[in-house]
Length: 556
Image (cartoon, rainbow, N blue to C red; front, side):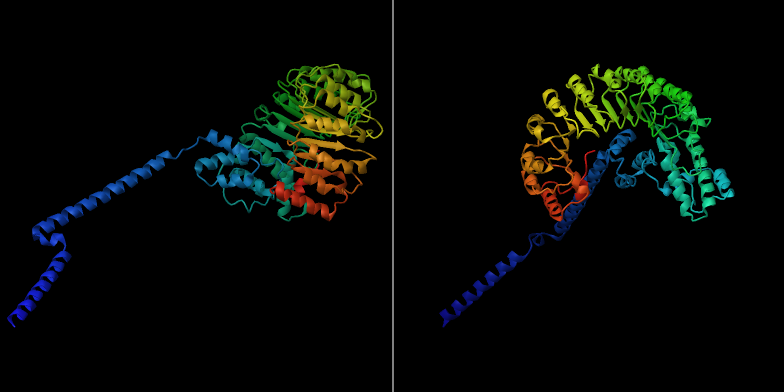
């Protein structure tokens, strides 16, 4: 009995000891310390935690400051250079406008540098009207001009940024603005005239200098006095740095002599749609003086229908070192003096581009001075629709200047009747360097075409005019031609008028070149639905970013 009680007691002590041990294990270590030690340790921990938190906060603040310091603020000149790449992308420029003050100022300059080039928005006119002084606006209102939508002054002096102006588009924008007011036609014309004159005065007084000026006598309604610009008292300052001048069909005043007084630094001069028939000799002399007195004329275009502009062309003798680009369109050369005009042109040895189109030569020998001259920098020749067979002149120019030529374009109204040696000459003298080529083509010239394509590793644009009367045979040749086209080719045009292209699928499949445009002249009359599907499939696989409408375009 005693033994039994002892065992029970021992078991009880063991259980109690085990429970006590487990309880001690559960008690935190710091609770075994005295109270003052526990409080001291707790204080040190709190202080250490707050100190670490403060250090972390300070480190975060330092990092933020470093980030701000790393933000690079580009100077205005750099921004302007960058934004030049977006000058035709108004959506992007308007986005840049909202970044900050520096970007805004730089973008505004670029947007308002050329507001009237290919633009006719009446909103532009409202912005310029807000730039007028209070006195000028009151004067317009007094004369019946509705300015109710001009509620606040302009944010910038927009006229200060103006560098390029097309007067036809400027007038059209003003006209659209007055038409929007829905007033009578008489009031509209009077309002348009008043606004045009007020804004011309604004441009002349606020714009520092103008770089491009286009004067067009067409589509100006009743406001015939808009060439006010050359006659303003600030014209010498305003037009002194003018580098590009285009005069289009102005016959009522001697604008050429007036412009010569103010602008002697023209780089580009274009006289467009100007009739030389029955023109007084003093007007010829005025154009001569304008060309002669330029310090560095590089680009000259005479789009002059009627009697030949012999006297103006003689002024090229004074631009022999600077002239690099010359165009002659719709001129008649019937007198013996025409020979002297082309002598002056042949003296311009630095010529890079020569374009003669839609001209008539009574005697082909008028162009003889061009054959006798070597132009070491000539890279582009374009002869088009001449009323005499000028292929011999074109061929001789290729032979004389083959080392520098890159762009060759020839078409002639009489090319169907004559056998040209143009392709043969190109293969012999100027094959590997060509970038762009447009020429008449005959089926019997296929071996020369194959040779040309085999060696033209830089060719980007090719237009074949013809073959007339042998189109079906050429259509069968298209799949083979596709394999021959160089990988560099991007634009391809064929003059096939009445033939259904039944080999288009093979042609597209065999193409190694990644074309950006493809044009068949017959498609302007009719293109089959199945052809459209084939072309869309080709674009989807090779150039998905190009639209079908943009793809089916002629080269020239």
